[in-house]
Length: 191
Image 1 (cartoon, rainbow, N blue to C red):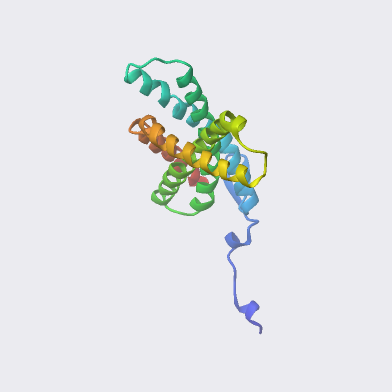
Image 2 (cartoon, rainbow, N blue to C red):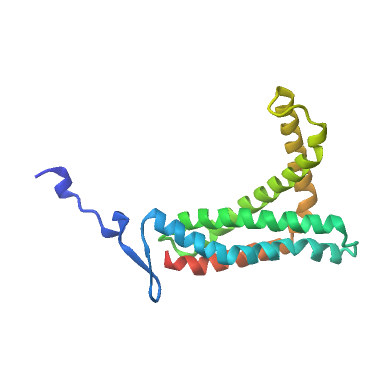
């Protein structure tokens, strides 16, 4: 008798056992099936999250009784695109971690993934906007000086984003973060 005959593997490890998601719908328990299921859910939920995340800009601007002008509109668009990109990545990452875990672990996975991915994606969109503006003064593409200019423009953009965006994200953004994490926790029961 060989060692492989003595070891039994449960069906849930095989990757092809179906998981009942909702009445009439079955998703493969394998990684591709879970990713497709998570991506479909993310496409439904993340745009709403990104809209609420972006609405933090005009709400905060109104709260401070400041002018809602072109700068607030640009910030709204940057926050919306960053919320969509970062929220989608965060949803997929949290879904990969959440399978078979208790509700507290799923909630924590969603909180951490959103708290990291959404600000990073938004800072990257902010960097792209900076890069577009400063590109007229940068050296030829892919030269040594160009790489230095990109690095310093990126560092300045991320620093300025963190300094200026924190006031928009906190404290109201914490409620948005908790809300989307609760939605993820309810959705991920089916994983």
